[in-house]
Length: 452
Image (cartoon, rainbow, N blue to C red; front, side, top):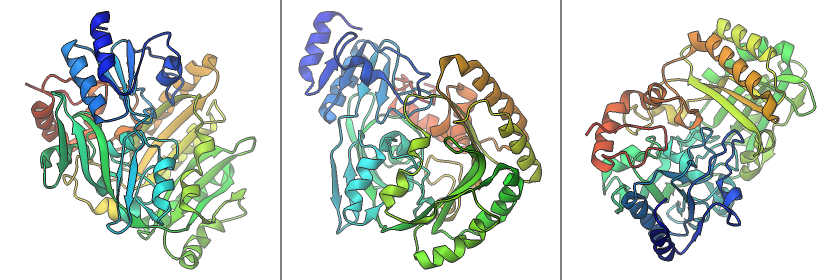
């Protein structure tokens, strides 16, 4: 860090707290979702407004400090925290205002999905966000934002109207189709490469109770279930978003499972889902009419904070019988009961798939399925076998993968994989990086390296 006099002067500029190692709250604030991550910043600035963020950027730039930015702290790669340097913590910035007439919302980056949805649902409104209510809205949106409403309303980034962004030179810019349009394009899928967003404005949609849940069948039915799901998903209307794979129920058997959310008429949804729910006798059928906020928290218990996490993810080029066989064989050897083998994973279709590949920085709309291995375990002593198994399965599944990867599921895998995350939009993003961050000040991310 800088000398103590400079640090104290910086502290006076902040409305929020500045935490140092040993301070109360330092250790709890530096902890993130993935228990594999154990980094110790030189200081943590707990920002409460845009002026604090500007002060952080200026201080870090003046003293050549590495900067990590935390919204919800859900980055699987641990990009929300750094060793040494300055952690800019936005988790206290939770302001939100819904305009029910215009059907828009202005939201700050410290909000989680549950906090955001609770406010918008007071007016029976929602927009696409992720599928875990503990996720932060900021990183999710900046990386694209798949969710239960993607088929009907597109990705989170497709519903972004504007963003206020603190750039590497300390300016606070508004990015929209009317102002700084190039920056607006880049923040919709370019992750945190171009600045720190201090406010998001989203388009909202009328969303009341949904028909949502999941149906699970015995694992020995996995091949049959996934073959059926392949045809079922290909014919899904926009109103139905689904995802599928294999997992072990808590304290119960291993299963093949399909989750879904239908945001149309419940009666029509019941008809549509009946074939999926009556393939044979299910182990579990949780489909029912529920509040949207309940749908958004349905998976929370399966991804509690404090577990060790190691993920691998890629979009699929082939969801065929050979892939189903390979996936079934891999999952059968999973060393942890908490692991999800999400093949074929999340279904990309409907409105999300009809946006052009270059319309936003998110570049993967041509792929129907996003395959992921979500390895989770509790004990540090089990890390080696879980990581090894994940990598072996990853190698076995490579013949079925496309070259693109969802940046929000990307581990710490370096430049080649970062390029895959931005795919055909990478060179345009480099040009944007050259303009807004030529020194690569914002580099604790899945980095787009400037060339100037």
